[in-house]
Image 1 (tube, one colour):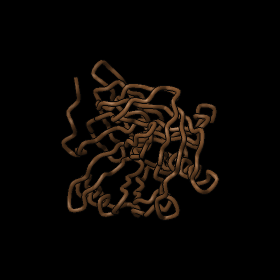
Image 2 (cartoon, helix red, strand yellow):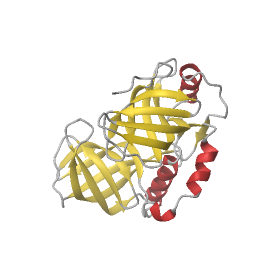
Image 3 (cartoon, rainbow, N blue to C red):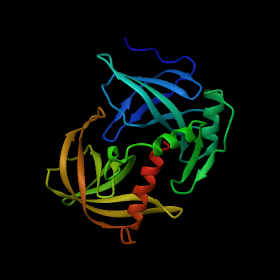
Image 4 (cartoon, rainbow, N blue to C red):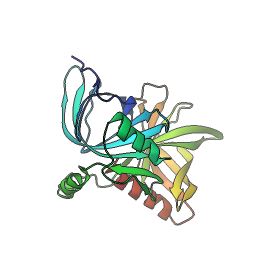
Length: 258
């Protein structure tokens, strides 16, 4: 039976940010820094989970919750996940995070809501953050992905032949990315050109990418379109690849928080 949403705290339009899709879910309970969530999909989440939701109030905005996966169980009804709360992030204003913590969660501000220079946004860390770092440092390195990937949601420009389209990146690595494209079909083996916006040194710059389509899947977001895995063949960021490398590294590191 599908669990009821928690009456104590309800997130608005919450979605679990996976590397190839967004999965809707409900919060079933919150106890201190522990949160139970449920989705009617069959999913498996690795050590860390990111949940995006909307906060509405005097200071409204998109908030991303970072959490460590404690347990998860899948049945015919869906997947139940127990999470340990680690951090909250908002791109534009600390008041949005503070308002959600104090008014929606009923919590005191236990640590500063600090501006993160690398990601260009405001970050609040729960008390469980230190324990999560200790657990992460003891993980078997052989079980970690050889080339780390980071879940992102970044709108980008893509040129297919002589036509320009808008797509969205769902994950990135040093040598590739996965995108969702709704307005065109791309053949596996073909080459596309991408303008990818990156936050760099206090501003934004576009990284020019020439990528080859390696594989395709139907969109799992519930929308039209398809998902494409691209390998980067050429890259120009105006700094010998350092901008892209730094961007991927910080998104991977940031993904351990939110």
